[in-house]
Length: 259
Image (cartoon, rainbow, N blue to C red):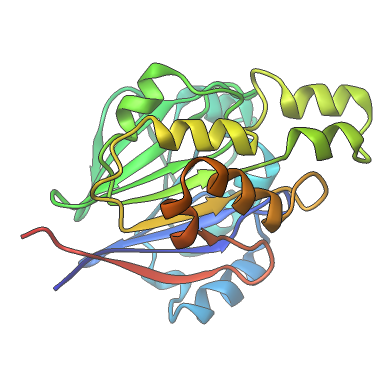
């Protein structure tokens, strides 16, 4: 019997959104797309806006939160976010605001959700681990470096969507001005390929059924660089890696239950 299911509507600097489904509960994590584009991408997965139960938000940057308020108002969805993210977004008009502590788990329907704080240049950013009580899906994006707490939260997962944002060499030689290069590659920026690989190498991967590379920069990275960085350190995982695209999203991935 299938348990947790997840899919992405898109992953990258032009918009991010991930769908997590368990039983009767369908949650959207972030929404960086306009409403009509979000609905179009949901339809590819066989979903409508009415299927959503809630939106959970990682942080206030536009590629993650730009479409949240309009989508929430249109479908009267509760929005879960930290107090810092809510203030950082300018306290937008939402049909229902549910503030949470990034160190405390909460429940939405059939999903248990464990947030965890990450180092990023936002007001109170976090990422999430979703669980049905048996399986665990972790998401890590928009983090400038890896903390011990992040490693503990992502240990022993069944599925992981992990940021492989940039290759340091491509970033240094790329089109970004020096100040933007410093932001992206800094301690509060985004994980590069090598940081992502080292994080993966340091956690228990025995139960890992799905490994997704996300938030891949279109200007400072490439699928080849992502796969090569992983293959150099973890060839078995490189063979199973799936890349989350920006434009068309990623279809449903299901996990097999342990019991």
